[in-house]
Amino acid sequence: MIRSLTPKQLQEKITDLKNICVVDVRQDWEYKLCALPDSLHIPLMELDDRLEEIPPSHTIVVICHHGIRSQQGALQLIKAGFKEVFNLTGGIDAWGKEVDPSIGFY
Image (spheres, rainbow, N blue to C red):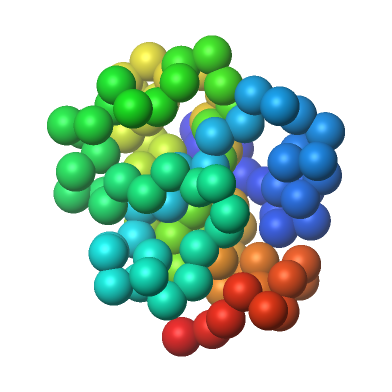
């Protein structure tokens, strides 16, 4: 089962935790339009080949545009053995609406 976080919950985790890694699985062009600060950009199609870039001891939050591709990414990470994995409900679009409207929309 894939656990989810709302944008507000992610904001709290970013504030409270030092060992959090936000993995953005969108395409390059999407990431260039808007991105969360300090997020790790690994397009979904490259995720399995770049697992070593993700710190296994961290809480991992996978994001995309609306939260669909990130579900697939979260599932891939769970299958690869990562323990603390969450999906951002509504993706970066929801983050922009609920937390930071300055992030930009597309």
